[in-house]
Length: 297
Image 1: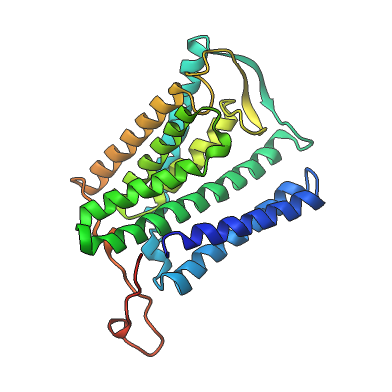
Image 2: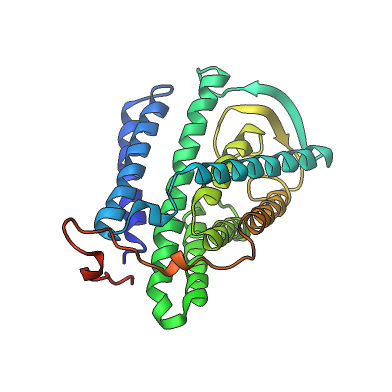
């Protein structure tokens, strides 16, 4: 239950906030208001989950936000940007995409402010997904299954389950069932990196910049966003587009680069103990050892 509660509650809150704002406001006022609402829900979701649902410090989710955290975030952001640059180069070089313009903004805002708002919205959305699917769902499932399966199998189950739910909830962007494979791959990538680090800096950094630069480089087709390079996709549907094989391959390359970075930074790869370890928040005036550990079903 604890594994799914943050997803369900914050998803409902996001739906209510977005529906209310979009019913009352138009572009360009709508996007900043959505940003404020989504940011508030993300922060509240993390704090409520930590304080009331899991009864653990926020840092135990992998949100230490120290200097090392932000350095890893930046590295992952660079990897996410680089793989989309590679996808752009391959798509244009193969003749599957043609450049139709540069520095374009779809709304009334000029390119720079529109890009800033878009980046902020993407960052909040990607951070929310990493929190609910990796920090809340994967970790709680692994904690609950560890006593029965053992540490590594429990984490594998957490990675698989969170990845399946992650893919399923992207069904609104899928036209063909085979395209679910792209989102399943993304879930496995983020979950694996989280399992190897016990930290959200790499998954969040890659997720934010990958999603953002996909639109910035004209490779996204599901929504209108500011584009540094505007493209017309003319190649085979199986290869181009957000779920095309070009992105499948480059996402896998990005995942491999993140794993290589973890190997270089931390040494031999291993599943982190903290994925199945519950560290309680110290009760005021009490000893954390006296507190009962909640079930992690």
